[in-house]
Image (cartoon, rainbow, N blue to C red; front, side):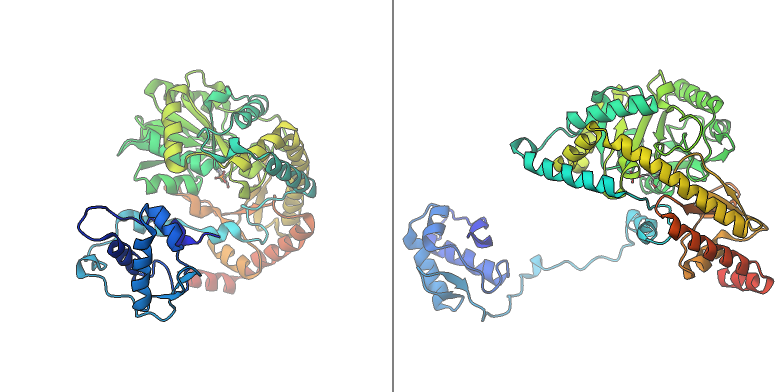
Length: 501
Ligand SMILES: Cc1ncc(COP(=O)(O)O)c(C=O)c1O
């Protein structure tokens, strides 16, 4: 079986003044001393190396003989040649090649910024009520396994190479059918790019749409990963307040009338859950049309609507092609999937495809095959139907338990859609203090006040219900109610305040 040494880029030059056997000797010795090949590595046979280098075998034999004589190699020519285990320490590299000492300079801004952006521990916490979690039932797992096995069996030369950076046409076609039917999106498969999820779509949008110093609207409070991606890109972010009708378009026009883009969550504002009213939708589209701004519609978790008619997408209302529609199967199915999609206005298509290609070429072939088949056979639709019922039951259980046990301490808002609910804290309790106390009691809550940037924060807990069956929700809600009770005792509240300050 060939080893790494057979794949090494061995090279010799004819007529460069150094005999061929010596060039081979020097190259092998240098690879040994630099530990490119560690002790014990099997070298190619003299015949194989001679063939590789197109030289006479005698040259390789002469080089190997010298290396044997100097103790670099063990074994016997013709019977396996190995690098000796008993070697001098690697020689010092010449000074000019040694690692330069770093000049005294502050770290670049992105190094500092990115180090502050992550909260991956918050995403992966398995305890209730982490809003990032969701459930997948046995039926979906079973179908997924079956389709994955099938896809592996079908895997052939077509899937081994580079492919369309937009994603396989089979997948874009089923996504397109789904979006037209379920979200009233106006599209054809040509306008769709398969991404690794909303986050990648946001990243591409930022790269493609924004010039240096362009202003951008985001919702306040809003989705922190959009805020962070924009901040990391150095965009001039304008935080626009949200009220009971969604983002306040008039405030946006006042703050930044010439903004290049607006990042919004119309069907279910993150984190408040407010639906963008029809009047605001029309106002937003009119502004975009008039100024040439782009609207980025993040339609996350719109599959899980529990009451009322599902609202059509904002993109479906747009006849001026100002809306970029982003959706994700990471919420509709499972976050580990990492597949989402962007529906793009035609003038942006080429730039988006090229940007996607520069970032990571294309989506993975095997995953695309499985998802396309999963959707084509109707499993996504039935998964959504089953999960919708289940999530609604979990939502109702959580809301009822919290209201029953702690209704005097918080006002629970029952969302019509999505995977988390918001419980507003009464009598000035701090959501951040509750977060700490709850965590010590095995309950995860996200303080909503952290998501406000310029607007006066409201103290509220974001509680995910999608990821936890009822038998987990009930005791966790009881523990949370106990935490709230304890935190409201006067002595305790003073202690919490002291701990915070
Ligand atoms: C507002 C919002 N958009 C999108 C997503 C999904 O992002 P992704 O597809 O990158 O997992 C989430 C997940 O929590 C979200 O809260």
